[in-house]
Image (cartoon, rainbow, N blue to C red; front, side, top):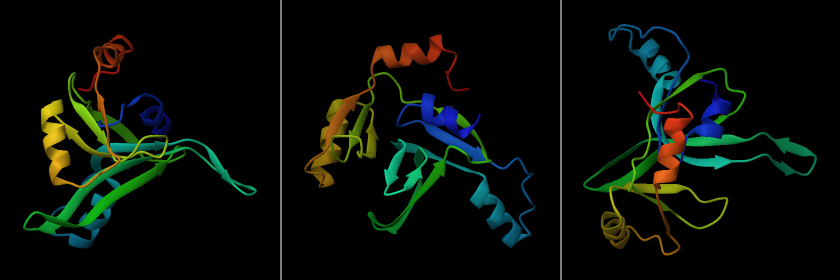
Length: 158
C-alpha cells in the first residue's frame, strides 16, 4: 500500500508496518541488520498533518507513527516517532485497526492533536489519564460506523 492510502484510509490508532522490500539480513551482520530495521518496522498511527505552507514553501501532507519507547522503572526517557511524507518510496500495510469501543486519548483538541494512548474502554482511558498529566486531553470513541466503513470498503486488516 502506498503512503497516501495510509494517510487517506487508515484510522488514527492503527498499527502500520513499513518496508523497503529488501530481505532481512542475517543476525551476524549487525550493521546491515540495524540499517534494514530502520527501513522495515511498524508503529501506531498517532497523527495526520494536511498540506500546509510556511511563507513561499508548501509542505505536503504527512503522517506520524509511534514506533516505541525507551526508559526504565516506568519512566519513558526516549519516544521514537517516525514521520512519512506521502511521496515516500516505502510500502505500508495496516496490521491492526482500533476495535469498536476502544477510546483514543488525544493530547489536545483540534487539527494538531496527537494520539497519546489507545484504551480498551472509557474507564481504562480515564484511569490512564489520572496517571499521565494531559490536562487538555480529549477522548474519542471508535464507533460502529467507522468499523463498518472499513469492512464495507474492504479495508479490514489481515
